[in-house]
Amino acid sequence: MDKCIFCAIAKGEVPGDILYEDNSVLAFRDNAPQAPTHLLVIPRRHVASAAEMDDPELWGKIMSLAVKLGHDLGLDEGYRMVINTGDHAGQTVPHLHLHLMAGRTFGWPPG
Ligand code: 5GP
Ligand code: ZN
Image (tube, rainbow, N blue to C red; front, side, top):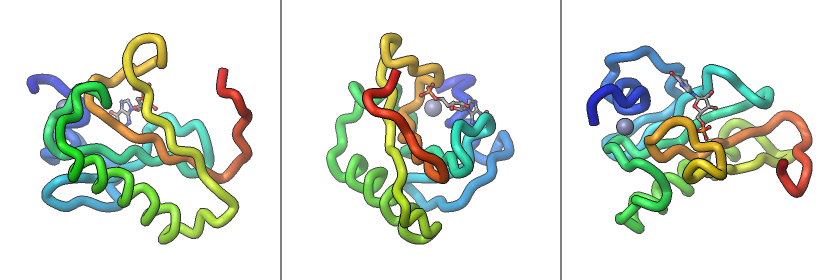
């Protein structure tokens, strides 16, 4: 997709603080973190939102990478995973991304 910022990061056209990447998924730091640790896990190929995801294996890779990062980064006190989907959820970047946030407590229910 043209002009998708996360596609550009995935292609290396725009710098990203990338912690992990392979041929199907990558994880990088959010550039406006909402928590001491705030990562985004995305599919490498453009998928507009969770509602558009058509590949269960790729879903599994995204979720597995998020949990692995939680382990590898020692987020033993817990973390929150969020996937904003669509306007009511506040999705601002139309490329599926899982927020992995840690390092503080999070309220429930979210606002
Ligand atoms: P959303 O609101 O769509 O769930 O989350 C989008 C997230 O992407 C936000 O937390 C925002 O800070 C982050 N973001 C937007 N543009 C960029 C960018 O160019 N680089 C990085 N690393 N994060 C971005
Ligand atoms: Zn994209």
